[in-house]
Image (tube, rainbow, N blue to C red; front, side, top):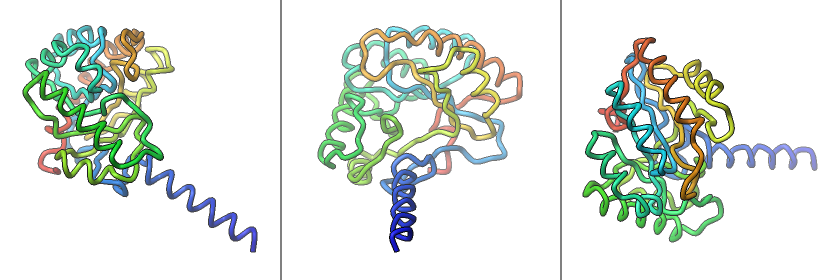
Length: 233
């Protein structure tokens, strides 16, 4: 009897873990993690910005004429609204990544909604454009997400490949991303580190210098997440 209870408990824990962080999970609200197959299109995304390093990434993208989607933290936007505006004016897409980058596991629904509402307001103030996409910090969704998404008009976006650029050196980041990217892929990198004022993202910058031309050479073209998903959402 005890072994059966242990198995059931383990299964329940595994199910909850997938609901919270599984890339294809929609348990806590509508979410997508890739575009439709059959098109040589990918979306390059960056979390945790803007930061002082973001303009350097913009220069690389501009050099190849490609677009990306930046999931930004409201506090960082308030610190550097001119960077968010430059992103918007360059044709990149800005998504909502919460205001202070908390882990939402165990948080009250009111806290979750407030975090995204504050970030939404900061982004609108900087760019005059309301995001339609959101990505939870650490990929963690929780009770209250569905309500917050509905009230703010946000679609959740996960990823099909994550570069682990907060821990790996640039060559490993690039190899990981390029080798795992497929049609319709959504690539997750970081142009910040939570809400740190001046984070070191040099490994990400160097990885982007390698990733973009490598994927272009393989015949992929880059789109914003909204372009990639249209008409899926």
